[in-house]
Image 1 (cartoon, rainbow, N blue to C red):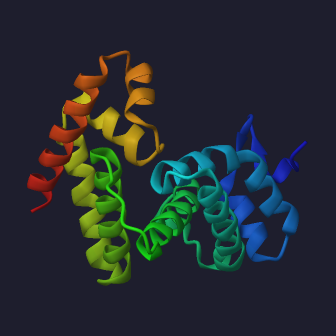
Image 2: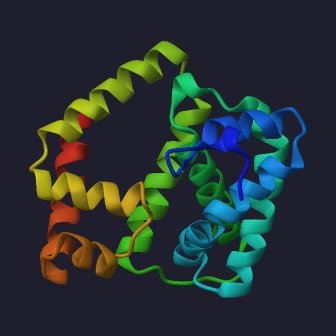
Length: 192
């Protein structure tokens, strides 16, 4: 049973858990692992396409979460999103450093490009510029048709596959793929 400090109304408090990790509470990291590891493994697996490599990525990501927990800033975003971004970046770094050449399918390539762009964006620019861009992204997302917005959020925030999204929104797979592709195109145009 998780400590009461991390659970409120059956929902895990990721921010409190990260704060506890920053203070050196190993049980907090364990709670994050118990609560999120299967989903995080899915995110890593979708990117690296190999279970053993995904498990290594997850291990590396949890080491990074532990060592970087002090750098989490709730003013810049949600704790759960921060945790997922650590895993995504670890997986993308694994793909980049891989000596073998592989062809990525379209959804994986799009996720790779989006994550790489986000990593580059996070490394550059000042805080005010980021806030302005985030506000603009929110406005661009709000301007999308609801189905496209929902599919994009499922794909890039929740880490769902196209098939999983199709099941969630109860739409044909081809339609979901088209909504995601058109939604990304509309976001690119809006952000320019």
